[in-house]
Length: 437
Image (cartoon, rainbow, N blue to C red; front, side, top):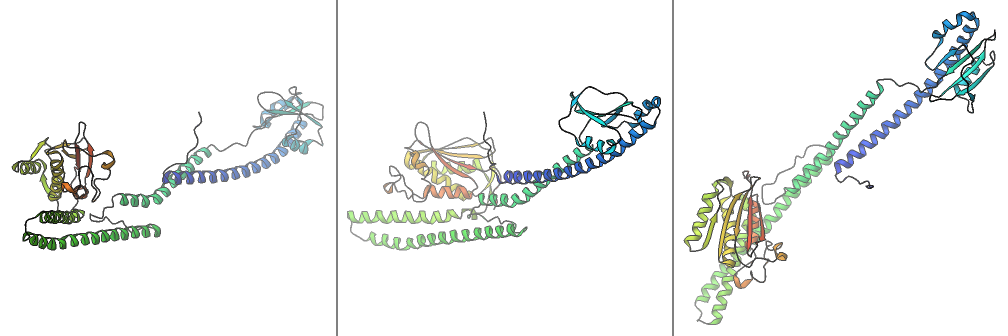
């Protein structure tokens, strides 16, 4: 089965691949050009030495007495060729004339007529046959071979490859490091908390991107603060005329219209209070953190409900003492518990510590639950589920939005899910590490 080649997904792997392949190809081309030049130079030198050595060796053998020629052969032998004092091995005529044969002919061909035969066998070789002045046969047995490589050359190549990999890794790290830090800063960007500024040092492009990101953080925080201040101001200022209208309604004669007007004003007052609470929840991170015993905190919350004859129970113990914002945490749990009491009449708080050390606080009820289509939207501001959280029940669509904002300010997360057998589970997950003020 063939698998198609896939382009790497990460930028680091793509840059590493491009740099490494490009440098290796450039190094291979450079090595190939140098090797070819060295080969040509060595070949020309070898052929020049071959002409001189063959002409000298044949002249020595021709001048030596016949009985002394055999003792001189070891001194005349070379790595690629040797001399034989016989007719040589049987062979066949050569189709292509090697360049070494041309050099030998140039050296002694005019004085010593010769024939060349190709010797079959596993090793490529040929023989040059000639006769000395006294008629004695001499055979030059030639074994062509490649130009030898230096034994240290493979180690040099491995060292160059290691250097290429090191340089590639360093270049990719320098190029990707600022981008990785920027991506991490974007993931942790939270206008509700104190901004974490990027270091504006480094290359020009990196410093410019860091300055732009820091300026963007400041603009987002200022924009959000301005909008929340506007919402809080409007909501706060509306409370005064609503209060005056309720006072005037008190002096009206009893009638159905008076009751309707009073209910409308009460609903408006509740909506205004929720608007102020939501505006404040967006800046929930401004509350100072305190060392809090979680079990005592939850016991106090549940006892307050039980003193008001509310069906609220607590199960589980954490034995945890955490750094948290107690007012924000209490507001989250109160909103979730009030919702459970409103739609189910009873609520159960469960606390447990996960395997990763995170704390899980669950508010459970057996109410109607929420449809799967609405679960993804119920924590949006002013979103209501028509079949349960409508205006007739007093809902404003801000309770869960406030809880969500405060959960983020606590460094945790809030998730909703339907329970088996009916009901809703609201889970607040808190980090085990202390919060940063």
